[in-house]
Image 1 (cartoon, rainbow, N blue to C red):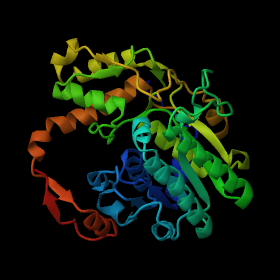
Image 2: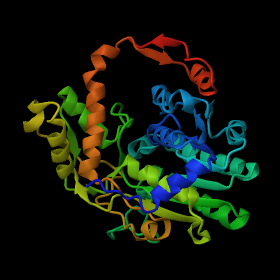
Image 3: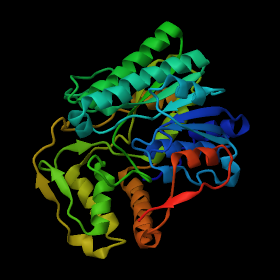
Length: 376
C-alpha cells in the first residue's frame, strides 16, 4: 500500500514552500535526522543540523539539498549535552526537530549511564536552551518502548506499563520533561512515539543495528539472519516517509490542544518477525535470486524485549491529520532497493572520500566541497 495521503500533509508542504521557516534538526547525520534535513531543504526551508557523530554518518549529510540547498544549510559539530553548542545551533531557529539520542535497548542495558547522558541530560540541556532562545515549537522523538510491559493492544498513548530497559526509562523521562516545560514555561512541545522505524540510510552494520537493515545486509552479503526467540514476537514497522510526515504535521499544528501531548507514529499494522523475514527474503530475492531458500537461525529471546507492539493511530489521525502513506511491504520495496543499489556499487567505492566533521561543517556553511581522507 502506497496511498496519496495529501489531505493534510499536502497542505502543510504547500504552506511551508510559501512561508519558509528556520529549523534545527538534532542528530542531523543520523538515519531519521538526515532524512528530515533532506525533506526540509527540498521544501525550501532554512535548516541547521547538529550532530556529534557518535552514531551519525558523515556521508549522510553530503548532497542532501543539492548546490542550491547547501546555501540554506548550516551544520554545527557539537553535543546536545553542551549548552554552548545548543545555543549556537538554536540562533534564529523557529522549530526544533529533536532526533539526537543513543538508541538501542541492548546498548542501554550494556551502558545505562551513556544512554542517560544522551537521552536525558542531553534532552534537558537542549530543552533549556530552546526555552532561553525563544524557540516557537519543540518536536521530539519519543519511543514506543515507553509502553513497557503493558499488555494491551493496540497501544494507546494514555496507557503504559513498567519500562523494560534503561532505554525505555530515558525516553519516557524526555516525555515527562517536555510535558513539564509545556505546563510551567508555556513551551509548545509535541512528542512522537516512533514504532520501529526503517528505511534509507539506516545503518545495517554494528552490534546495535536494527533488525530490518541488518537482515537486508546479511541476505545481500550471503550471511545468515538470526531471530531472537521463536519469531512470533510482533512489531508495528513504520517506513521513514511516514515519520517525516508526522514531524511536519507536529511542527505546524495550530490547535493548542495538540501541544504538550505525545502521539503514536506507526503504520497500525502488526508483523511477526517470522513474517518480516519472509517479506525481506522475497524482496531481496529480486536482486539476489539465490536467497529465495534462505532460512533464519534462532537464538534465545533478547533481554528487555517486548513481545508485541501495535499502535493505535486514533489520536494522531484525529488531531494532526496523519495518514501513513507506506505500509510495511511498500516500505520494504523502497528500502531494499536503496540498500541493493549501495551493495551493487560497494566494490567501486573502495578508496572513496571520507570527510572530517570540521570539513563537513565548513561545507555546510557554504564553503567548497571538503577535502577528504580515504577509506581503505
